[in-house]
Image (tube, rainbow over all chains, first blue to last red; front, side):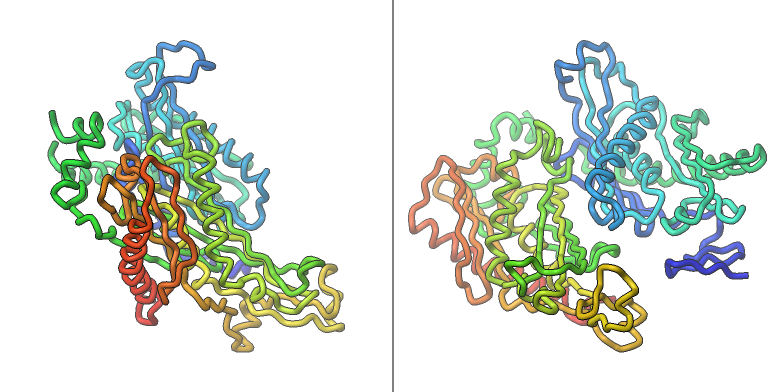
Length: 244
Length: 298
């Protein structure tokens, strides 16, 4: 049986997806650090057509309105380009989406940072989703965490994040936007893999206990895979960096 | 003191040390531009797009076309609106356009005003008209400055030109009386876009813009008696003033902009800027041609 949809992509009712990968497979993930020469740390992530760039700045002095604090603060700002937002989104919707993503990113990353190392100060994490074909929130979190590491910000652990959606009862890792549109349930998981501590979990749809467990396990496996990519990217960058 | 600290503490002396010897901190000679990357079609989701890099300065541009009914006063014109925005990580302070630490609103509006002025001679709105009074394309383009490391206007204009050249507008047809009822907006006599399947079936290629000219900008900055072509942000910050020259393939000038600064430019300085711009133009134009050459699409 083949299910046809309005968008040109067709998801066959078999084990493989429109782009030919298995249900539990990532799109080819590409990470690169030191992409912005003027930022303290930066990272670019590409999951096929999902492209996100992150720049980290600071620490800088906290604005007076936030008052005195013995711990530092992470300030995350996410922007979407008009092509990432898509034709169906007007300016207000886009701004609302950006605010939500910024808040979510801040929550996902803050637990991983040693905030008491920069009291009274702020690290700025600026994210721009250049193009999106699904899973850009996870990609943004992954890239932002890598950029923080690139900026030599002290971290407890890195925070990879990935999406799982349920389409016709099967669980798909790292969904494209057409798969997201078809799904009746989704999971966004951000986690510190070394300690298996979850920093963010976002589930929508109704899940049975067994399904939920399977989805979380799949997402955790995805995060573990992403962590390896992040690690090797950072190690490679450190190996090729000029000795100073 | 190591070189990095010296640069931070005494940016002017740092640059001076290099320029005295006829080179620049990144190893270029004074008259040499940075490496250029021209990538048309960088964004899949848009109908025309470009990624342009001048050294570290990078700009991403994308355009989306929709159909509209021409405005009353300008029945034979479509619309082209281009918005220039800075990514929040584009400048060393971060903050993007909205934050207090971002590039000044003046810089953004100056860049976008110069861009509008440079594109005006191309007469694009007239070309976007399909049927006077009843149908035209509305092109909405967004240009994002991802990294503003000097000569931002050059990169923005180059990206805009490459994007416009890459722009593939969907072919259209007139709505006949029979199918007019399909959508409420399209009455008989108006135009509608063909779907991809229809266009492929009828063998109609997408509509391309005619670009009679290719205005490109070249920025030079004046430092003491020297002229530095295609400056980085560090050089711009130290330099007395910057001069941007917009010219086309026949070396005709479309604009010369000098932004304040502490140095006044003599007519001789402008002549030198224009001469350098001519040389750099050839380099840029060749790269654009190369990017659009048929064997460039792999």
